[in-house]
Image 1 (cartoon, rainbow, N blue to C red):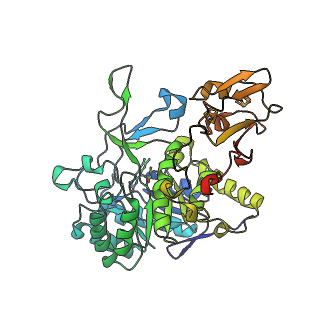
Image 2 (spheres, rainbow, N blue to C red):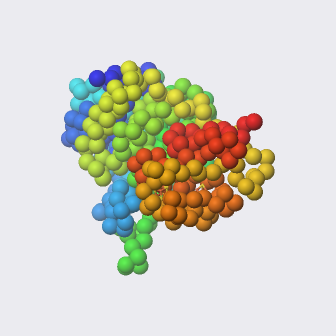
Image 3 (tube, rainbow, N blue to C red):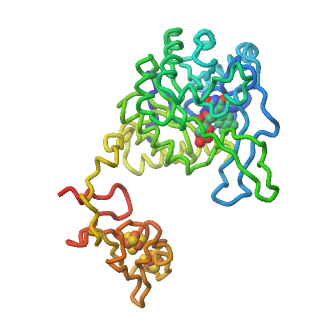
Length: 426
Ligand SMILES: Cc1cc2nc3c(=O)[nH]c(=O)nc-3n(C[C@H](O)[C@H](O)[C@H](O)COP(=O)(O)O)c2cc1C
Ligand code: SF4
Ligand code: SF4
């Protein structure tokens, strides 16, 4: 068995798989369900004293499954912060959840939310968490809809605080100055410049960042012509595909602040999603929607899958691959490109006619109409082809049929795995 231990903000964690802030960290009973799956860490449901986000419309989970197979894991969610009064949580579920985590070697991270930039609404909550015995605290500055659930005079909560680096700085500083334990800032995918935000919160004293909270979303039921679920935009939880967006935002942080502790969250459903986030520089990886749409067993699947992957690859520990992709992350403007795009693409698909099944998918999907099927298999018109690589990615054959090659030398530049060659460098 591979060594799955990792380190987050100076704390050893038995494995990187955990559950980010949601119901499962809201009470001892639900925490037990995910702890039994072997998780390494758990964040609490966000506790707070704000008037509004503790009252959710019921029902509040609107699965989009019926609207198409690609939406099977997507949903709209109008649950907001913890529904339990703050003082009650502090006396009952808080200590009990902390204890069950400690008893099972699970790192417990309470999540708190204050109002706007008012330090008096943040600092006391952080001090309470420190007195509770927490090892670190997450600031819920990423909630997509808390703003619209609070009474108007307390509406400056959640995501707006993580969209503006200056606001984020002031909130983080109020909390970091109030306690000795590490403060983790939770980012929102709605922030345009996550690199600037990351620099600001680190400067303010944050010891880590969780990237990311969910999007803001809504849905219309075309059959009824009305909103599906509630007639409002709330948390839009868009399943596994949104990982590619959250991962990009995470990389803005990890590539900007190399080595800074980051908790990767957003669209993680499988063990390889966890590995991807770790390779992108995360120290720990959190699931949330996946636990709801696929059941708590998805957590253990991730742990076992990662273990098998590490054994297969010969990775002895997480640090063998953690952050391995970060140094390569760059702006596309820095990637070698043609000075002026040649009319005849220098890159073309090459077809292996023996492995080709003649299914015709490439002909159908080439947006440029460059492929025609012949008796000998597909042929690309080298004047119409743009060298885009789409046919290669969609070819369903088991064996490799299409390779992107240079027009001049025939040398392969992309086989469909990993990064393509920077062929234009010369
Ligand atoms: C039901 C539910 C409740 C959530 N509650 C909170 C919360 O109280 N505080 C918070 O910071 N994030 C909350 N989140 C956001 C998640 O922690 C997570 O950041 C987000 O869902 C993205 O991860 P995912 O794609 O794995 O769902 C909640 C998400 C869900 C689905
Ligand atoms: S590389 Fe792009 S343009 Fe060329 S044949 Fe394939 S899909 Fe068509
Ligand atoms: S998609 Fe692949 S297998 Fe199908 S015809 Fe094209 S090259 Fe052949």
